[in-house]
Image (cartoon, rainbow, N blue to C red; front, side, top):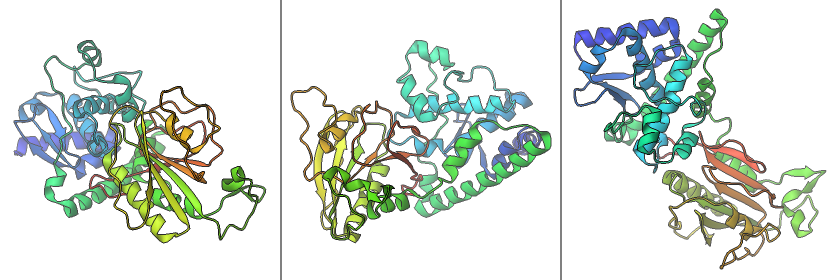
Length: 395
């Protein structure tokens, strides 16, 4: 990077320190590279590359917004959250959210940036679902230029440095985001202002309140008392007792294998269920896979290989709940879903949440295990956020 380019980056950092210090701190932690092969600017989740000619042609205000845009992608982990989704469509959805956040901080985007004021306050996962694969008209509405592939989220960048280096980079960026949030709050207090709403989502991505694996083990390994001392998990059996030390616990786990669910999360949950089964000999686990159809059950034992996920289509929650609770409303079909025997005591559903939840609630306690940044509200059941970083390691 030339001295002139370095001065341009430093100038943006200084201006952002006064206007939006959150971005300033992140920009100082980023690795910046001049790359004429990049159309405008792009990031791999740690490094930011920019086209020198494009960058130097921008006004200072527009340059500041581009810097903020790219480091927001890093802070919100947009590269790692794409998973198996279509990368171009995901990039468009990420830009809708990112550009809304940047403008909400009073920065001025260059002409032609992707915008949708109706969608910009949603999660990227929800924007991705709503825009489907944009048609030519949709792309013009969003501001996608004709013939422009629009990819500023690069794949394979940090991973080329190796798993150990990648993990260290992820930890370094989590620390940078924490510092940036502190500096922004101090700025807001002095100015008597309130920062953009995106800070709340970034905080959720940074530190989920409780480790999902801890909650999962607690959910299936302990007895919750919420009916004046009676164990709710066994009431549907007609058993009202506080002492179930000799009772076998059956867990039904459904893994959403629609195209939008990251395979790393499926592997992480399968591995955790295997660990639970191995550590608790009185627990038996029935695993299902589901997109619009239900596959299973696969009974998970300590010595068995993990089943290979089946699916890849759309998403429907109904078949699983019909299988575990015969009292649920049944959907019409030529092949009715067989009811699981023995009846499960708890149900776990790993999903991104983007499907219609059945109106009736099963009489079996249900945990929705959802990726961070996905759907957060369900009409019933307990929602737990699951985070898997870019290296595939569960957090």
